Image 1: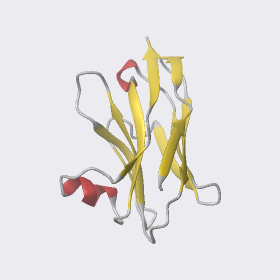
Image 2: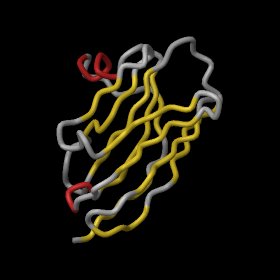
Image 3: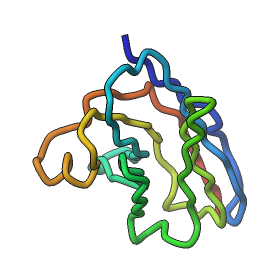
Image 4: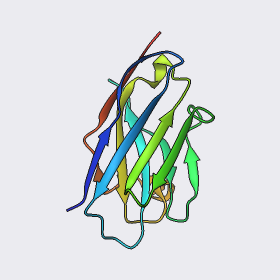
Length: 126
């Protein structure tokens, strides 16, 4: 059974930093793509940062230069380092994984990633 468990959310002031972690267990597929999504109240879910099976990384324009996604294969953990946080970054953040090789492809197909974590709240005050 695949499990994704996020941690590291919290409340910070604008300009601050947080690092989110997503511990993955039970994943036995031969390929993967992983990513971070977020959803603010009343808004659609948004893809924030993706890492594909070949190591390709992509970011939403709104977070480029401020957020960094990384994957520690030895620890089976996905990270999202968030710097220069803004109030607009306030949302529930979710990590996701899928056996297809590219999260961008998953989104283009109009489907959701197969596996999701429970989410961790990030609140940025001005």
